[in-house]
Length: 267
Image (cartoon, rainbow, N blue to C red; front, side, top):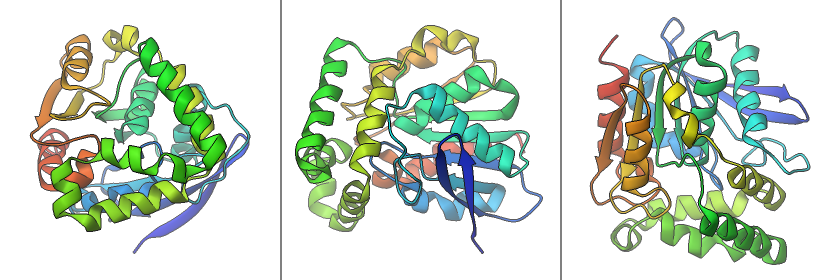
């Protein structure tokens, strides 16, 4: 059974869902930009066998509120901490992808005592100048035309052409998430991405970490993620073959195997 909660964090109200048996170790999952907690649906069957799973919609996404921006990673990390505090969770495994993966890095750096193990999937530690300009362009497109203005381009980055051709159901679910995202929330989160500055600090992460890259991911390329793993003491690094940016949806079985091998091996 799914337990639903509303959690206040600063000026936001976050939609939270909890599944899994009481007494299991906790895991909290954080979604990508322009997604919501339902992006983790493919993982829930496996995760809830071994974890009590908290999913929440990032502020500005899904059923969470979209306060006036801009947002920063300090704010997004504080939101994750607020969810853990509201549920009286001291320590949890942290799972995040893209924007959520960056938030996961933030909590490992700022609140290491709250982290048991860290999975950072298909994310970056910083953006070079061309990336900063890209976020400005996407934010302006959304100001001018709403989420419909970026949905096709986003989907082309999220999934390979083969997935678009052979798995229209997955693409349709992703399209619905993108179009349902608050334009104001999306724009506010692009400001956080522009301020991302974790790469230089990854050597300070002391908790066990796994980085997952997609072989064909243009948003978080393999070489970028390998550099992040190399900078993080004792971390693991895995590449999902033939996968673009949202690997947990595009290659759920491979993603699940990588996560399970890392998280559950020490149980």
